[in-house]
Every structure is written in C-alpha cells, then in structure tokens.
Length: 117
Length: 113
Image 1 (cartoon, rainbow over the protein chains, first blue to last red):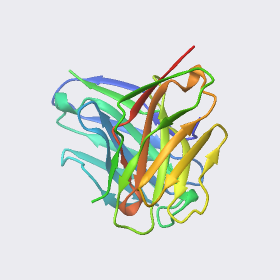
Image 2 (spheres, rainbow over the protein chains, first blue to last red; image 1 turned 30 degrees about the horizontal axis):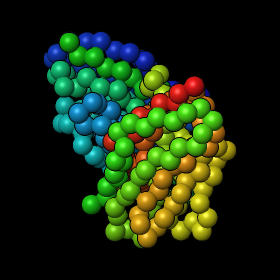
Image 3 (cartoon, rainbow over the protein chains, first blue to last red; image 1 turned 180 degrees about the horizontal axis):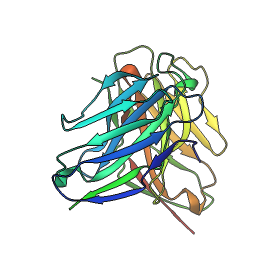
Image 4 (cartoon, chains in turn orange, blue; image 1 turned 90 degrees about the vertical axis):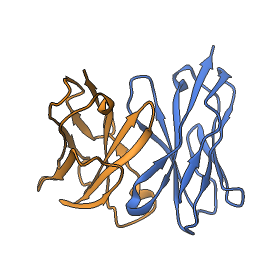
C-alpha cells in the first residue's frame, strides 16, 4: 500500500458525460501528479499540483481540468467524454516537487479505470 | 528531448534465476533521476528502485539492483532469484521538467516455475 488513495476504482460512463476522479496523497506529500495510461499512448503525464497551485501541464486535453484543495487532495475532472478517453488514470504524490533526489520519488495510487461506452 | 527506451516487449525467466530488463535513456540535463516501477496484473504501480545521476554506486533494494552505466546511458534493472510474484510489467522512467516522470513502453516479465 503506497498510502495514496484514489476513488472510484472503476467508472463506467457514456460519451458526452462528465466525471470526477479523486485522489488523496500520502500524508506529508505536497505534490500531486496525474497520469493517464492507455494502450496506444502508454503512460503519459497530465498535470501536477504543488501545495494547491498548478505547477506543470503535460498532454492534458482542454476538456480535462484538475485542482488541489487546501487539504491537499486533488480532483481530476473529465468532461465531454469520448471513447478514446477510456484509460487507467493514476494519481501520484511526492514530498516536494522543488527538490530532487530520493525524496522526489513518486508513489502511485491504485488508479481509476475509466470506461467510456 | 528526454526519452526512455525499453526494447524488450516481453521477457521470460525460470523461477530462482536472475533476469535483466533493459532501459536506455536520452537527456541533455547533467542532473537526472531514473526510476523503475512494477505493474502487476492488478494494475497498481509499485516503486522499486531509484538511481540519481550523481550517485557513485549502483542502487540496490533487496533483490532489485540497477546496473547504471552513465556513459552508455543505460539503467538496466536486475532481479535476482526470480519469484512467481515477479511476473508483471516493468517500467523504466526518468524525472523530467518539474519532476514529471517520462516512462518507457514497459517490459512484460513472465516467471516460469
């Protein structure tokens, strides 16, 4: 158990719908990262938050957005869903995005498997 | 641009034997970090081992060791005394800008009894 929690574990929805994925980082971790794992794209970085503020964006679609709340949990919002959005979405956390080295190790949650029908 | 290459889509090994999973990387940054993660069939990503670019010694964590050859830009994972529970996907990753991880395509390891 990495200490990172994600809910829900599975999500099945229809095209055009909107869903929210939730993540709670490990106790003491200030940084939250979101990744998408799909068969055709592999593991791709989406977005990073550090202590409530957006720090970096990756290959995140405009239909997707995220935020990190004062208690450091994070939510990833996916809207106008398409079949191609079906994937495993991971949240990861680390102690401090501004340092490098071992303390920067990212620990992953169990993931949310999204299926868009 | 930073890139991770894992050239072995699949590997198999006999139980109790050692196996090496290949990883090469490309970066122009003098300071970087390399990670290996394990993804069992259940789907979670499990951190295994970390190697910093300035670390003098190869990293080891229990049965996992990292064969770090800086000049060749390789960071191969060595698993000693393979167990059936080691059957999984293994991903090599590099820390990129703002500490995001850049992953390779992964290697599927099958351990045979």
